Image (cartoon, rainbow, N blue to C red; front, side):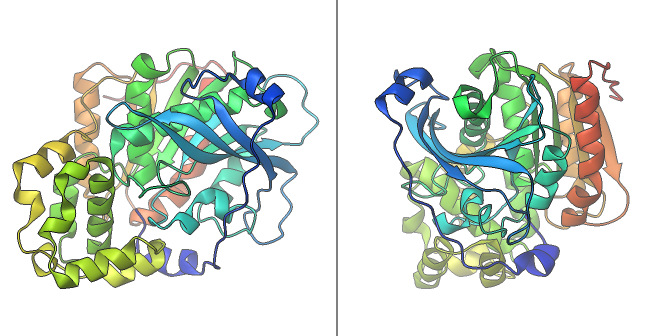
Length: 387
């Protein structure tokens, strides 16, 4: 999720387009595993990575489609981007699997669409990682740039997509990575939810990945509390996007049956918008004004939203966790509860309160510190928990 900074400096986003996808040859399919396992590369094509239009980055990039798993355990295909620095390094290098914050639910908002044009919202933060010599895999998430609606805020689906993006990068021969590649997990806001879920799922879903640590911030750990805090306020458009995402993952929720005519119009528009437009269109709009009955008061909706709760399982690698004290979109107490829950389960958590700034400034100021924390993990330095 992004804030008013998104609607200012980050909202000047050009129209994005999707590149054609070139299927792999049979030989490549054999190399990458044609068995349909999570993380198998389905297709790959050369792409490019630019934080600003035309800005050189001395990297190579590939847009990929790879196999993953839905929140309900079904196989699916997700798109993403693999970025590798061209720095002359021939030996192994670390890999970051990176999850972006909210970009919207329209397919043209996907990070893989914005990187070649220099319009992706967090490309400058990702460049900080490639400048360290690290490879980066950026998932587009389920349904963002691929058929179907984006399962926005569905934690398990996001965690699968992140871990499988790392697997796919390692299995992409052109990237030059190996099975022993050290992996870091990183994300903020929606990406904080995704990276936290990836950290929790690692030991059961992708234990072969050599995960050294997770840097995660602005985590919407409790969606019911986040929705309540934003209902009818500045961030209410994000609540409606989240309703679209939950309904996409769990069609039995029947979101449309709760909407009044105004709600159908708003959500129909949101499905084709990126975050800047969507946040403006839905802001200061209450759930009650768009529905005949509030779905968040229904047991089935509450049950599905609780399934995306962060903090129910101990990450098996150290975590750098941070949250802005004045976060106006994701209450500080929600992030602090993630810390408490992980610490209670014996996780190694280094917690940081960001004392100055709000939601978006939190990631901007903390990203260099989070990256340095990951660098220390790659270097084998011990993580120091402050639980």
